[in-house]
Structures are given as structure tokens and as C-alpha cells.
Image (cartoon, rainbow, N blue to C red; front, side, top):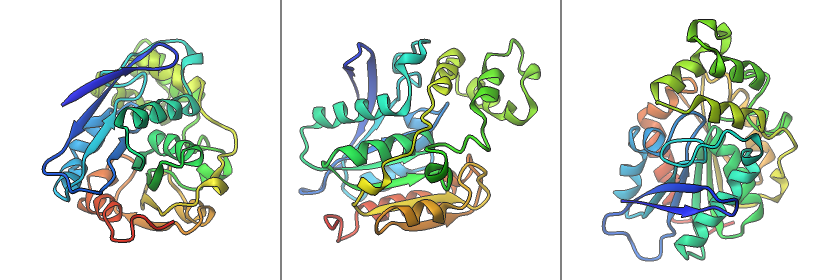
Length: 262
């Protein structure tokens, strides 16, 4: 099932919803996808949605602004992870739930951290595809992914003209049918200030691929979050989500008996 809502700044965002015999008393789970992906690609394809639904969870996955079926403006001022965190809070408002669990990957993980720092309704958290960069540079690791070079790759007339080290992002954007100008606008608004990690005091799982250049030294992030747990899976930034352990780690962590601790 799909639905949509209007944001405070006038955009229409679409989200997906799945449930099958949801268990009473379990909070809804909200999933936030990565850059140049969309909700179904990041979460339904790798089996995360099915793993959660099979455990009696009601699952919602948002197509972030500039992605998927949501509005895709080209104005830089309408982007940035803090703006996307406001979108998450509006989606929580729509659920009417007093408590939710949140999982984000890559860009979505940075958004999830910002949302969790400010919204007490988020009581359990999974962040994947990020590592030391979240602590040391305030979000996605721009040392491995220079946003200016990625934006240049996205806006190049021909993919062959894109800088070689960032050409993969151009290929991903073209493969997913993304609006490349919208993605470039987001990159120009990328969050680079310190993240308020000290305000996050809920059970948190940090997930990272062993060969992910955007999630190096994930133990640095886990150590910066009170009581966080770290799981390292085989794969890089794109393949770790398709490792069978990814879906089972996310679903298992969000349905543990101690889910209300923290």
C-alpha cells in the first residue's frame, strides 16, 4: 500500500506500508533508504521488509525528497539531512504512534541519527552504511565521497565524462532512473556539522560492510553512541545490504524482547 503527505515546505512525499497480522504492542518500523536509491530498492529487494513483516511488524518506508516517487525539486535549500529529519517526524505524526523504531542506511542513517536525537518517540534505532565519518565529519564520509566530485559526475553531459572515482554514483543514478539534478542539489546541501550523538540514548545497532569505503572504522560510531552494538557483514556499500545477514540483523534487533529498554 502507498500513501503520501505534504511537508511543511510544500513537497509531496510518498511512503510505502506493509503489514501482515501485526502483533499487538509492537511499535511501527520506519525505514529510510540511501542516496540515489528508493524505499523498495533499499528495503524490499534485500528482504528486510519481509523479515520484519514475518515477525509481526507494521513497516513503513519513505521515499526521501528527491528520490523514488516523491517530489524532486532542484533547489538546494529544499535538501539536507536536517530537512529530511523533519520529514521523518511528520511521518511519525501521521502514524499516530507514541513509539516507533527507525532504521536508516547511508544517507538515511544520517537522517535517522538526527531524527533520533530530537524525537523521544523513536525508541530503537538501526544505522547502516556509515562509520567513523559520522563522528569525524558529521555524516557521510566526504573523504571517501567528495560531494563536489559526485555532483559533477551526476551533472556531466555524458557518463564517460564523470570523474572516474565517482562514476559509480552516476551509474547507480542512471540504473535507478533518478533525477540527477535533484541528487546533485542534495549533495550541495549535505550535512557537515557535528552530529548530536550524545543525545541518542536508545538501543542502537550499527551495521557496516567489511569492505565499505563509506563505513570505515564503524566501531568509532558505535563507541560514540551509548550502549550501541556493532555488526560487520561481508560486502561493500552496495552489496552488504544484500547479504542474508543484513535483513536478519535488522529484523532481529528490532524485535528483541528488550526492545523497550533504553
